[in-house]
Length: 407
Image 1 (cartoon, rainbow, N blue to C red):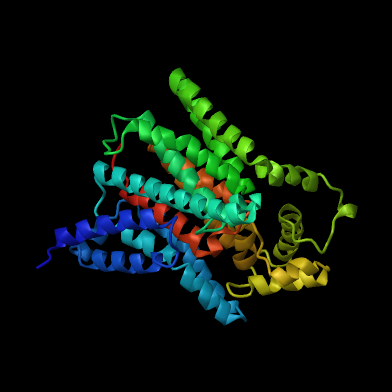
Image 2 (tube, rainbow, N blue to C red):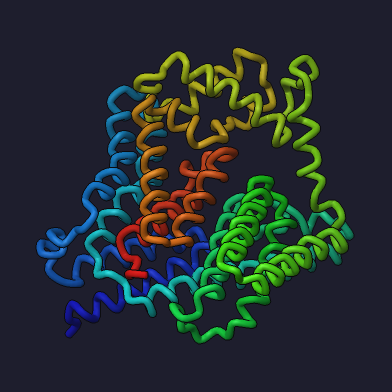
């Protein structure tokens, strides 16, 4: 017969499994979440655990974003899309509530959880490169080793986010070996740094490349302040190795980055309103999202109507290519503002700022860089409108806030 302690152990194992599977299989994640919730229900006195919530203000703040989407259904015409949105965003409610009342992880359990994400990212990279190289040998097309053709399990933006956090975790383990006892040798983790940097570069997600540059810069500044000059030198070498390898074998890896500057500096008169090119399309979409916000800034257009209203504005302004693709705002802050008004925007912004401030107070560099990764990617993608972004944010945000052991 299973006691509550065994269900806690099962819950810990499921947390590690979620972290491992996240970069690999979107379809399995909902099942793992359901199993974890079941283990949570049977892991002890729920009433007593609820009383032990140590950060109720943060709990309310995190779930308020979901509650505002529920309220947004009151003035939504497209209830079908609204209900779908509530369904995929259910993690905003589940993870904070469940993890806030789950037993705090031990340092060893947190180490294993970080290694689970790192391991999942490594397996996803190997599988993607294996399939991509096989396709390249048959077609001779270098694009099989770049961007969407390479990213086997997720859109490159989301895969780059996972790799970015895994990179931060590796750096943290290597910089603080006294805190982390892992079964993986340090040299092996160090070898993954240039490999993950290489993968982020050839995935060619522009936000991902900017993100990893920011991670490296932040790590170098930290190392210099800590007078760990050898570590700074090694990280610089790893970064150069990863980027130069990408440029040597795949010289087209930076073409998307170069095109961004060309489009961003283009005059308004020269814009092609029919384009769906990544950067140009985003600029056009952002303009329409800002216009929609201006007309509905208090309460927004409603949970289920935001995409319909955006597409209507695209059509009114002759953005034919974007209309066909039915693109969202491609900026989570604009997306939430348009859907829920000023309250939705502030709910998201304050939650991120509160998490960043809390991470700084706790001297939790991984948590702080996680928030930076979310913000950077949220500026160019509506990352909290799809499962790959929602689960990543809600899972790790709740994990770092409620289950992180004392430093």
